[in-house]
Image (cartoon, rainbow, N blue to C red; front, side, top):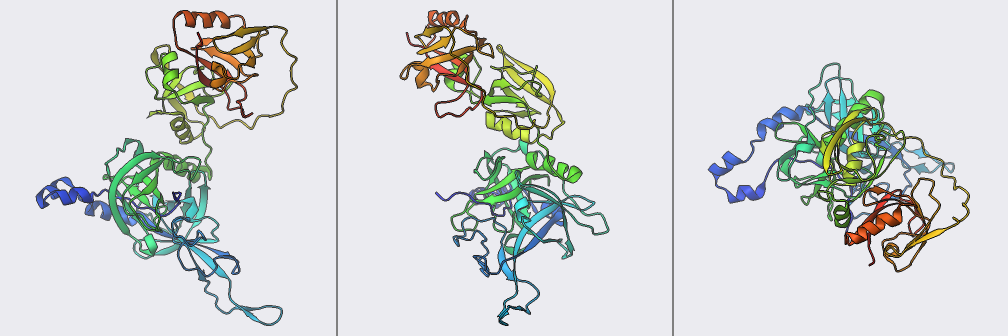
Length: 490
């Protein structure tokens, strides 16, 4: 299957299928009237052209296909309606032999953007202005002004430009993308194929889409018509608030097939504010390693469901230190529900470092709430491998798990595994020698207590035990603390 690529995108609230099914009277009563909305927000939407001189001998120079992906397929590419054009200077130059050489070429990327502050701040996609030597902004009345880059965040694909017009500009405000539901109407305005002010409408097709184009993929999917040149344009709700930034489409042909993607305002707004204030975005760090909750883990840890992010470890002196502990399930952060570890990762990335945020988590059969200050992640730690320690003087065989532990406590206080039966329960679950058992079914483990704790589970006829494991996996990588469900051998 062709992988999605970044293209320009515009979205609006409109449903063709519903319109065909209803008569004129019903249509006028149920479908949103978008003309007034479009007229109100249109003055704040701009077209953006960025140019960058390129080597005329470079592959693809002179190709006016409008697809700067270089493969000629038109199905992917940056989505900026890019084409190579001659510069204004057409006189040419002489090489050493006296032969007239053609003038240098320039690549021009056409995209969209919108004014977010009357003082002249404009938001667009970072990929629209990537590598640009000059940027110009065209307003709906035809006014063209140069723009400077205030800051860009390539991880979020957001950039903020600044123009000086000498007077306050019409602008639009952000809305709450977290309030969107599948089926909501949306409106997109942009500059597809160099046609400024083009407006299209559609609905929200899906939320939280990961199309594997970036670290923080969490797109709004829409069926609004989106084409090359819409990148960086606003996606409005019916209140006229920006709830997304059109950024990509999936298209085998290069044109709109009704599958477009927009960056949610929940991600774009804090990035834009940080870029306007400091020129860069420093994302927050929670200081807790989490994982998915499987049905087996849910059962053995007596959790209310599989939604949420299960805490495996908490970094000392991190934001969550003293608040969270292994076995907690994070269910909300800063007012947003957390359904999975990825949702927690995305939500944390939306919060600037230094922000105080509320966190909700499940522990001991009940919900708990607290506040913590999200901080910047610490510098990379020294990964120097410590010398191997001598083997423990004694071992304990745990046949029900298919492993052997050392009688000597691990440095963390847990039980160090010295051997694993290849086809035993622990081996089948991916546990290897050298791992350390920190907890069993939510209870802290030591080398002296594990055997008795395990016997209690067997006497209770539990089918499996959930272990909190640290150490390398079978392929030699260390993913950090993780919960592993192991069937108990009778």
